[in-house]
Image (cartoon, rainbow, N blue to C red):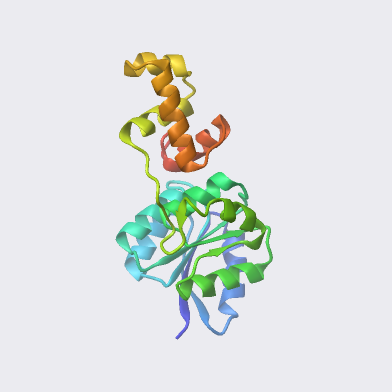
Length: 215
C-alpha cells in the first residue's frame, strides 16, 4: 500500500512541486493539501494520513502549533517539518512539539523522500546538514518520541514570556514581586532546559509557542 501524505504549505507552487515529486514515487500518494496550519489540523483529523509534510511559517496557525494539535488528536500521524530555518531553536521546538522529521527546503528533494520513508518506518529523521545540532540536543530530546524531556515550571514560563515581551530582569522582578536574583535564576534555568542562549532565540521560541501572537 502507498503511504498517504498530506502537504501543508502556504505557497501553492511549493505544494504543486512536492505533489508531483511524491506522486511519482511508487510507494507514495498525496491525499490532501492545506494552505495553513488550521486546515492542516482539520485535514489530518479527517483523513488520518500516514505522514504530514508541515511548513513552519503559515497563516492562521503556524506549523509548530499545528504539529502539537495533530500529535494530540492523531498521535499515529507522523509529522515531517519542511522549513528554511536551520538553527537549533527551531529544530528543538519542532521536535518537542511532536515532529519526527526535520528537513530543510534548501536541501535536495531526495532528503524529503528519505524523511518520509524513515518516519513511516518508525524512525526519527533530521536533515544531515543539522546533524551537529541534533547531536548537541541528545540529552534533551527523546528520539523515540520526539518529545522534550525537560519541561518548564509555571514560574519559568512566566518569566520567559516577560523576557520575550522585552521586559528587563528588574521590571519582571517588580511585576512578579520577586528579587532580581530569583528572576535571573528562573530565566537561566528555563534557557538551559530549552537550549536557548540569547534573547533573540527566546523571542523565536515565544513566537512559535504563540506567546506573542496567534499567527
